[in-house]
Length: 395
Ligand SMILES: C[S@@+](CC[C@H](N)C(=O)[O-])C[C@H]1O[C@@H](n2cnc3c(N)ncnc32)[C@H](O)[C@@H]1O
Image 1 (spheres, rainbow, N blue to C red):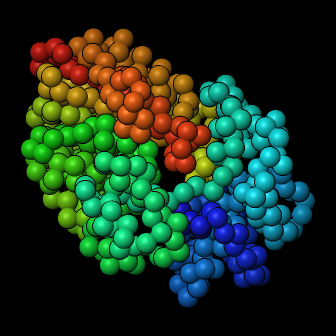
Image 2 (image 1 turned 120 degrees about the vertical axis):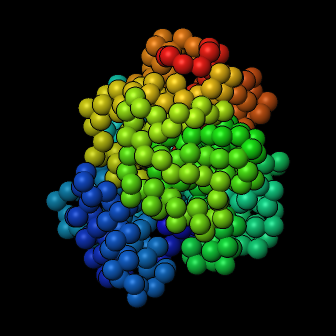
């Protein structure tokens, strides 16, 4: 997750060292080298840089990508970086000084209008600095908030375990982090775990487990009881998952190889399968504005085909009566409701499973949940769920 600065305090202007570092990151970042990765590596190489300067560099880099279309491309990079930071400050202090039309035209590439509704609320959310969310262990949100300070819970009940952090500590260095008392996890990603809602003792499969963000939440919700199979095409991600799980004291998982093909990693049938599929990540464009300028319409089409394949290949591993959950942190029609519709047309033994939106519990249950960045300060996510109603076996 990107380092964050408290949104209510305007940071001081950049010194020349910060401007140079930011300019280096911006010049190096491209489709193969995303800005957040380049930034992390650049800051790691400058290990002596004071923490407040690291944060200023991060903010400058992301502000540049967020406000890029407003900048004079012929100006020297340090001037552009200052101008982007000034635009970010102006937007934070006086958002009405930017018109809806201007924001819609410049905040995101024009091709996106074919894939999502470009509403004023969405583009305004895109231009805001993203919040930092923590996930405490179940029932421990209040105690964690008291220990860390500068935390606001997302709500009551289990929402009290989702904390918005506005302080300035390096959370990765806190004793609480090293003790596995919290994870950095976006609020809407936490909602995916709540929607899966695996009871302790069940057997689940996290089919696209990546570095384990959802796995750690599922494991905590299961109170470390039962078993979660985890797989991912990228072995390096699974190695990180194992390191994270050790710190978080999540033990009820087993790693299994799966490349997304028709052969599942095991003959076991699962009470629940989560397909947290690779996607175009539009839902993270607020947090990671560089991706706005590297993602293409072809990516959306390719990913939609991959998502349908992964979902269809994972589905037979759900046991009758079990739950299949599809999640993506994107908002394009092709990767959300169209994948869900194509899957439903293909796999008739799965019936839509209605869920209560954990963030809006008084709305009617639905089989598809949209969590939008304009509704609350968090990533955009789409979640669909089904229940297997047929007998075990074919698709
Ligand atoms: C959205 S990320 C998963 C994030 C993870 N669940 C978490 O919460 O941290 C999607 C994952 O799908 C994996 N993936 C991509 N193509 C795949 C494939 N063909 N088969 C299996 N996993 C794949 C990627 O490596 C990536 O880790």
